Length: 113
Length: 115
Image (cartoon, rainbow over all chains, first blue to last red; front, side, top):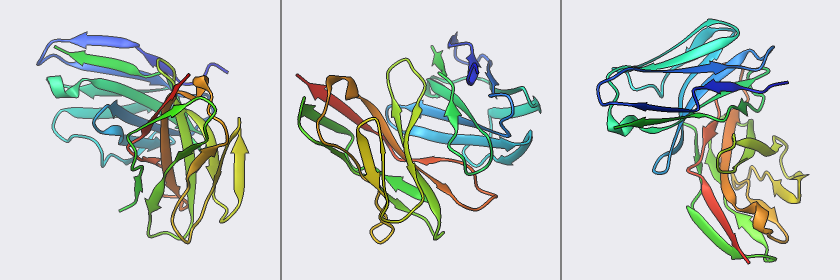
């Protein structure tokens, strides 16, 4: 079992550019989560899919962030017009079912210059 | 809403001393899963402990925690710290209703073990 796969591991963008982060959940897991990790805020919840349907996006900054799950094998997090404050490690996690402990990927470190 | 509080941002200990990392939580739901995740640098956060049973001790890899619903606490303990325990530790909560499967994390506690 390969675990949750996130690509790229590191991404550097210029201010105002777009960044797309990819996540491949563990096969058979029905729930997929996106979190953002910073030193100041810790692990912040962004959004959550169950069986590919968006369930809760209450943590997503509304204007520039969007997430999709077009099929059961991958999810994307897109950040438009990136800003320096978007710099963080973005973590994807998946779980077998709601209420089960999610397993995390290694994250994508986004640096916005 | 639901929340998890880890009061200590940084805990520094000498190897061999006992470890205790505090975690308290708030939820309006009587049932919840509580978790401890450990995050080593350049790795993915991984599950260390979990519990949903009141007053039952759960153990893994030398660490233990007991969920106390009366005090809404789930403190992480270890009898003797090792250098390899240095990492970031997160306490987290999942409500036990089907519609809410997201993990709510505390701020995290960085544990630093010195020789």
